[in-house]
Amino acid sequence: MEESGLFELIKTLNKTEKRYFKKYSSLHNSGKRHPHAALLFDAFEKMPEYDYDRFKAQNKSKPFYKNLASEKQHLMRIILQSLNEYHRSNNKKTTIQFHLNTFELLFQKRQYKIAEKHMVKALQLSYDSGNTIYILEIYKALGKLYQHSGNLEKMKKLLDKIKHEEKELFISIEKEFKLNTIEFKSYYVSRKIGYPRTKKAHSEYEELLQSSAAIVRKNPSFKEKLSLLTIKNFYYDSLPDKVPLMKIREEWMKLAETNENYLADNSMQYLVSLNNLVNSYDELGMVNEVEKTLEKIVKHPHKNLDEEVRTFIYYYNLKLTNLINAGDFDQCLTHFPQVEKGLDKFGRWFHPEYKLSFRYLFSYGYFGAQKFQQALKWANEIIINYPNETLEEYYNFARIFILIIYFELDYDGLLASDLRSANRYFNKQKKLFALEKTMLDFMKAALKPEGVRTTKAEFTELKRKIREHKSSRFEQQLFSLFDWESWVDSKIKDTSLEKIMKDKSRMQMKEK
Image 1 (cartoon, helix red, strand yellow):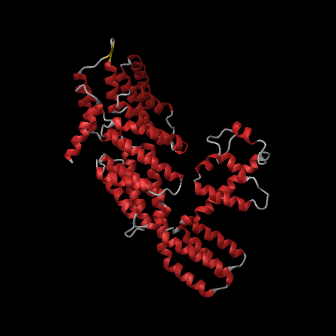
Image 2 (tube, one colour; image 1 turned 45 degrees about the vertical axis):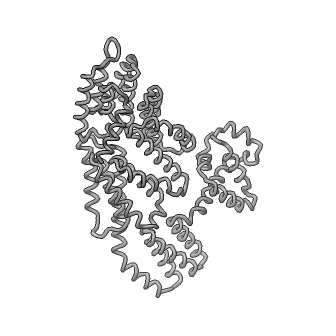
Image 3 (cartoon, helix red, strand yellow; image 1 turned 120 degrees about the horizontal axis):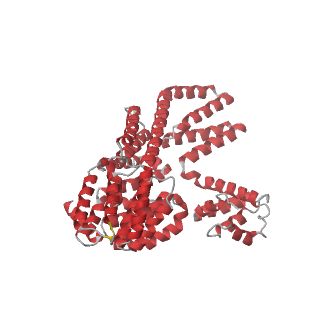
């Protein structure tokens, strides 16, 4: 039996939300028409995982079980009402909507003076928070109020105000809407294409940027500026040079931080943008900036479960990535138990892509620490549990990475079998790019009658080809997922990948 999301919703509530619900539900149970909401809530809350058979065994004698379907619907309604009531004061949009709803109730009861006060508050909030879309609705409500109350003097003042603001207001709404549409399209293109590996794919990003530039006014509103910077973020993220991307992300943050009302109503967007910025700093090796921005992420107040989950994801994703890039694989492994605890605690709310990212980091971390069996386990997890809605980048990488693990383990039989499978996959997908082809060819040549065998000369030639591919702007995505050149160097110098990457990291730090 499905529980229609009710169980999962209850599990997202924090302590204060639960406490508020119980107070709220007790008020709504005074009439005894639906007295069972709190009892059903407690029954769900006590279960660590949803199991209907267990739920039935424990609760079939409870009063709510006889009409369980309707009781669940009522409980869902009460929870949502209590959440709306609890969070209303923390969100300008919900507060504006509250004033609009209250206006309608008061208007129907002909309480025009009180109704007008609610509209004045809503209008001020709309201006303060930049929610211009509500202003037209508020003006319409005030016009209806003055019409029905016969207040011609206030009607004239309202008409003068609308006439004065009409052009600017409509242009602002139109521009914001058009830029938001391009913003959505940019997100769609980034999810559909990811890092562009052809000129045609890159042109899709360029066209969206040009479209946004054609819309922007000489004096854009705050929200127009943010939208334009977001569109530029998607565009510059598609280019190999990450310095312009970092600058755009810094500009977005500086602008957002000038508007406290925006930050209050868009706390999650601010957290996401902090993560984007710290990733830029990390890519560019800006260690001090990484630490400062990471501190902001850790200290970001959690308004809800989503922000708590995102903070966990962002912090550990970056922490593990930093340790891996520095070649500090042993230190990386010490964080794995804590991360796995977090996955157990928050995993049900992870987007599949975040689970995928941690599987990749686990696999890479174990590989660098020469724990190849564990690396193989997590690489296979990527393949087996690959989400349909995600780009194939991690999947394609995992197909090649597994071959490298078999190579390290000297598993010639599995290497030969998986190599044939990988070739079929890439040929079918028609997405075999230069670096992937080079690695497949190298693995094929490494399979000798006596087993997996290679020479330093073959590795030297592989290194030359890898460097060639690195200069192509269409091959950058795979290079961001694994240090191919360092792995080859470890074979040429007959040492560990960890030592090569640590030495490389120290050298880069000295140069800076």
